[in-house]
Length: 305
Image: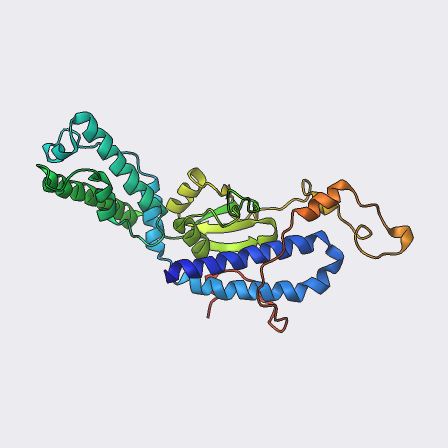
């Protein structure tokens, strides 16, 4: 799917910029040398950002937030139309699973698609199509799912789409691939809805520290602040920019004289902490490094031509 490929390219470029910036921060005396290379990476990320943002529907993001915030509705367990599912206990179990499947898909989708036929097919899995009441149950399940979808549309229609709330987002650290699990963390474990929110509402980013600032509608903010895994989200008061402290960053202890070729009397011993800090950084993925680009900041799709 083209949308997924574009999202993957943007995510890979963001990870490459994160690794480059976090590594460069360890050696502040190389800032001037690293600046044109980092600038080129930012411009490359901005180009991919503009492309990926075209695949995001802001209304669908509101719908996903509304779906995630829904409580389980009263399920029509006693409705005879669901008799093909079995006895009352089996009907209750099946309808609860139908609700969970629909909500999960509606909340995670970043394009407004919930595939009702898919969740209804899961409800009827294992039941013969020639069983008495099968068609009646299938039609009743479709109507039930349609009622949930219509409720979401009503919520979105009355919600304020204006981005008014500031949210600080911290991405998880990159975890290296193991024999039993691929590389994860950062943007790897994020669903389409969350990626869409980042692409649409990002206003400021410190990729080196994995810290992003979003300005989002209230409905989206409520979801981020209550169901944000694997992100770490916290509200930001208007007019107050989220700060970044080096107090607990072991790499901030790396100063000139540790790894560079300074005069002998100014050199410092390499400690175990220094080696641990270096091991925390993986090689950057290749991205264009044309230093002839201008020095614009990669802010978001609003800067696209």
